[in-house]
Length: 291
Image (tube, rainbow, N blue to C red; front, side):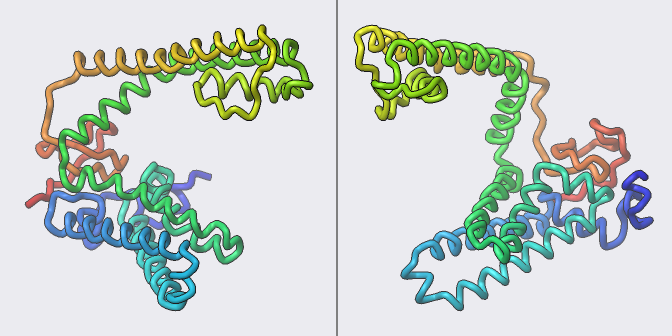
């Protein structure tokens, strides 16, 4: 059965009434209410992160245990209500829940509830820091937004090339690790092929922990070759990314002033202020709200 058929009738239909007003405030930051909401949310996230870090200090935790507990309960309730409100005011709750920011918003509260059963998971509430990514759109830092989008496009365009390159590096470290296992042997710390491959990875990436070192002249010669190879390993992905970013700059479309306007249907952001339809899914857009 389609998940949309199990939703209440109001989900999937154009937003109106309190849901439209809540959507404009929560998901868009071009109105005074929207900016104030997002700035208050960012302040709450920052304050909650400070409390998490302070609670990790044993002396502070012991002297302020009750106060910290109540503060965390308050923040958990706040973020839970905010997450549920986000689900309630979008046309397609499941689409939002599975989006990047939807998952981040869920992870902001989920560790607290899991901590009741697994206390060690409490520290994972630091995942809330990802919610600070919204500051770029809230403050309309156009240069940062354009750089972020350009970097994302370059990463996507170069993903296959980098994957092929990493596959070649993986084969090289496997071969070199096996050779070192044969050359050095267990008596010099290379007790198995996996251990030798571990040494090859740390050497070719120029990390070199020093817990395993070759003792024979041939082994040291191979290690020297691996270290020199490491410079090339670092340079190739950088060159790929640089070429893709240069291509992105040459192929950039006409620059437009970014907005936080979002499509109610697909939740894509950055739509132009004068658009009547979403350029991603074709859904009609309501009148643009801004100050």
